Length: 118
Image (tube, rainbow, N blue to C red; front, side, top):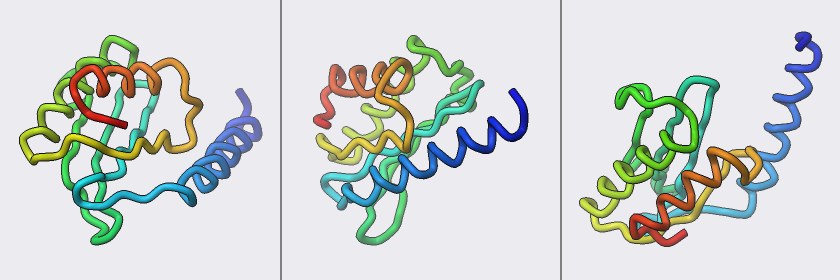
């Protein structure tokens, strides 16, 4: 893809991200679970928007997991265990401008299967 196409795709994702983000917010007991995916890895964090702090995070790069559906399920299991250890059983899912499809949907489904309500 050309630089112009990539720039346009990024601009559209940022636009979707702002639209989604304007409608959701997280607190200490019900944090915003934000996902970021690159071509190689997946990053997730639980954010308390009231105090603007990160409660928990998971990083596919540190775990040595690729950004595919199977990797998303493994990261979700690890992240769910981290959230449960901190006493959190529910959250608000922030898809961060990505379509709810593929890796993003696989992560959310795996998180629900591991006991976190979204």
